[in-house]
Length: 316
Image (cartoon, rainbow, N blue to C red; front, side, top):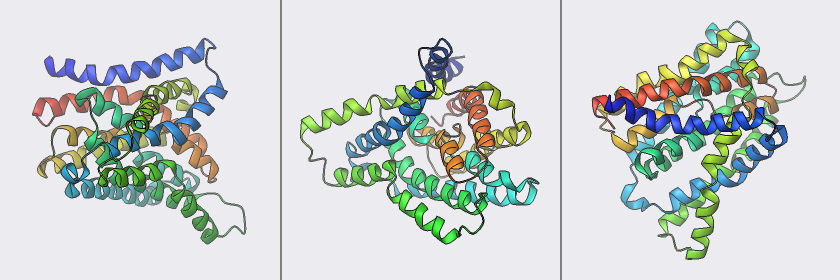
């Protein structure tokens, strides 16, 4: 019972904040414009500040674990290439492949990952290392699959699309934050106290605002569309990936904060940015939205179960 209560106390508060956002949207206090602006603000400002703060404040030479970062990168890569390959073999509707692949492997690591670790440990050094290993690959792989599987206009060359996509990856605010945070950390964080406090203040807005925006943007009707591929993607995203790689991680000796970060990397719901990228790159936005909604709803159960299982076996 104590393990169950521990699990519930970790997961439920995060989802209750999302429920609050949903409720405020239903009573008219929040609207579509708020969701759009909040998501843009989170993506370009608060999340990069949060990632930068967590990296810059870490004694990177002391806590950096190359084995752990490589494991995150390898697991992310294996999930992506496996899902893409299997979807090309088994999916009859070829227009769904890009959207299905992206939403099946890409987690809401920056929001959910740091929130879960902060709830349990009050810090996120290992969450930052997980982000280093996974988030750049999330963006790169998403661009690749959406470029090659998208329904692009006739005559549009893939080489031009890939070139522009690479430029967009380099301009990605979270990737820039990772690079800057690593540089500051390696320099021993020489930033003045005033700057650090400003960064911390902005970073503190990231998780609650992102969760409220996620809840406010939740549209239950979309979860009913294309239900079979949606449920298949939800199973891969929330259960299958973690079931394969968590035992491997345990065999590699990862426990505690590292294991929680891996659980979120492998079993957190699909990030809402999947929908934005899918729509902008001529892929199935309806399927993507359905997967994001379904995984967000179901993760309140599955993540609680994963935390409970890992707590019970002593891995966290």
